[in-house]
Length: 160
Image (cartoon, rainbow, N blue to C red; front, side, top):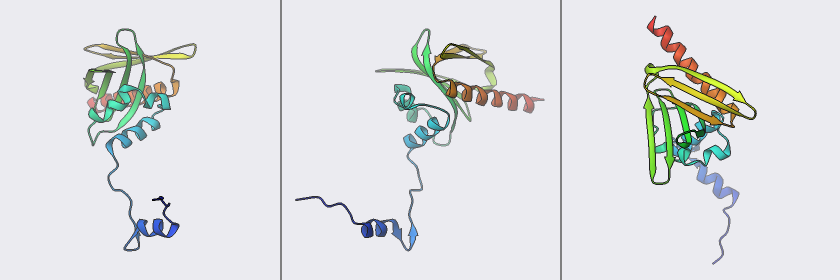
């Protein structure tokens, strides 16, 4: 039996119900996270990293990513540092192993950015621990830096 491609009339009728277009109301969680990662500067390589593919298990359905930086850490190897509208997540995902740290914006004391050659480094300073990520994606690092700084400024203005 040969498979025939649907005709244009069939496709048009399948999109129309009661003379209105039907579009999916709920976007898949993984698709939404991939789109948010793209909007904060993640490359195709960054979207295929283990940590990026593990994010649907970490991000809540009503939480949105505002900044993400991925790269290498001196101690852990390949890691990802995310800034969402509610928290900061440090994610170290390896096969059969997950190390996830969740940090509130209240304990963040600052963030540093340095650049050397093609790469750059983001350091997130907290009261508990400092997180450092070396990356080649300068665009994502700068967006992450701006997002974290804006949250810190909002927190400081609210506390005054």
